[in-house]
Length: 89
Image 1 (cartoon, one colour):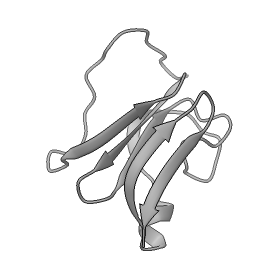
Image 2 (cartoon, rainbow, N blue to C red):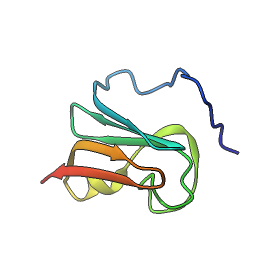
Image 3 (cartoon, one colour):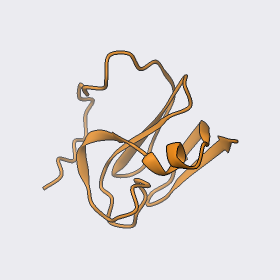
């Protein structure tokens, strides 16, 4: 079950994260940190969360693929069922 809310809600992120950008799709959200990490949560049926599966999540999860590849997220833009990430090597 994924909670889809039509109003703002508080979200717990790790305390040391500083957010530099955020984007919202129709059912998912993504944030970029000042350190270049990407966190996503929400409805993931089409893989738009970037975790290599189609699972949904109520909790923000770091996109580990970017870390494994040595890439830093610079900007994120969410579409209805997609997520675009501009990365730096």
